[in-house]
Image (cartoon, rainbow, N blue to C red):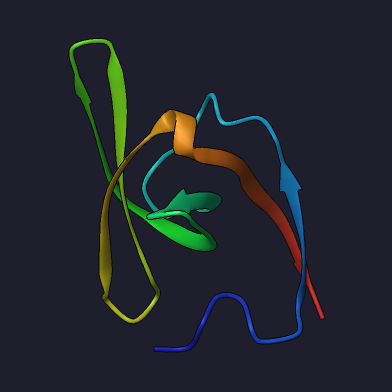
Length: 78
């Protein structure tokens, strides 16, 4: 599977995370580190929105809350 973002590509990140859906690429914090990852799934537990994030090769990093997502990638350029 080809990566959606190649090494060295520039990305534009919007701070608007109000309308995230599966397949979106997001800038997020996981276990104290910052990554650009795919949203694989989403769910709501009570008043919390949770997002399953992972990479383009099928790897899963786990569930994060919306407060751990700092932006959505809106443009990718080489």
